[in-house]
Image 1 (cartoon, helix red, strand yellow):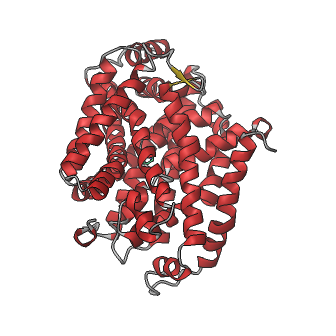
Image 2: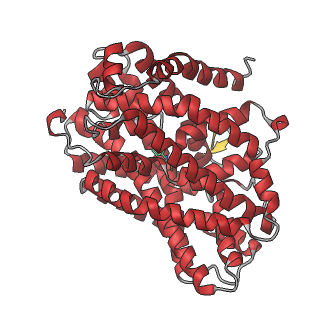
Amino acid sequence: MQQNHRVNFGSKLGAILAAAGSAVGLGNVWRFPYEAGNHGGAAFICIYLACVFAFGLPIMISEFIIGRRSKASTGEAYNVLAPQTHWKWVGYMGVLTGFLILGYYAVVAGWTLEYILQAAIGGFSGKDAKGFIRMFTDFSQHPVRPLIWLYVFVLFTHFVIVKGVKNGIERSSKVLMPLLFILVILLAACSITLPGAERGVEFLLKPDFSKVDGDVFLGAMGQAFFSMSLGMGCLSTYASYFSRETRLGATAISVGLIDTFVAILAGLIIFPAAFAVGIQPDAGPSLIFITLPNVFQQAFSGFPVLAYVCAVAFYVLLAMAALTSTISLHEVPTAFLHEKFGFTRGKSARIVTGGILVVGTASSLALGDWSDVTLFGKNIFDALDYFTAKIMLPVGGMMAAVFVGWVLDRQVVRDEVTNGGVLKAPYYGVFLFVLRYLTPIGILAIFLNELGCF
Ligand code: PHE
């Protein structure tokens, strides 16, 4: 164990941005819109917001407490805080979850590289909606091209992980996050003003609760965990690098707000654009790769240079946002192998990278040649997404809440939340109540409802 050598993030802002870098990624811009589209739009978003407050924030603070207190990555954190108990399995499950998520997340991250290339060589120009649909299907079903991009992306992640993450993550997040915000706001404004965009805005803002069923709740809960990087110990691993002065509550609220803000803005880009060009909002994982290039073409049709620059800049930033998330996912199993088995960081990272390449290859091929290989009726890509986001993350998050709410010494929890009595923490009582009752019971109720128990 490395406790004594642990380096801290340089500043409070650095800690917030690193955690936000993990949270903001393809989950916001790629996954949120298609989950919302599949589950009816505005009603989904309302339930999503409820999940962010009832589950997301309390669990994020819990993960921060677990990480900062144990000063260990998630795989070992429970071992440190509750030695000789079965709680360690929660940590191990987090490690496995991170590995499996990376196995399909990296495939989509690879797609962003193809789209940078296409944007840069003018591959978008002159295409209409049908052209973009074809472009995406031809590419994602191709047996080789998506694999090459997957490998490039995974190797890039590997490189950053081996080179030492903290300075890299902290510094690049400080520049990239603000740039991403600006571009996302600009694009949302363009999308809303496309002719015919009103129906998209309505879809996003006018809830129709008559369509809400158990699936919508499970989808919104899974999305909240996925988007905020919760339930697998990613943020608890980052929190092990937090300094004593970092305010856990304020950091969690900032990260939650930033993440939600980017997701809603991404919705404001995608749906108006989708309706404007007549693409169904439930088009699934391909949604942003079809509607977005269209936004660039249509919104800036009189200004080809602007269309070009925005398209290239957007995919570059999306790839960067994905990279700060893939790094945080890779860090969890890598730090675990390093701490648990004493492998060097380099060797641990190589083992993880090797495994990701195998799982990633399978999930990429699942969208083309291997589409008939199924697990529980889903192709490998969809199965990985379903089990990790909708089951493993909520279970892991619920366990973190129960652990901090019921198992960890009350004094330790108070000490962490108030930074050893320095902060006032006026909402401490509410936090503890939500964590002990509302969060675990709410998550359990959504599972039981999905299983048809009521
Ligand atoms: N939150 C990241 C995103 O939205 C994905 C992620 C999930 C990262 C779980 C780490 C852990 O893209």
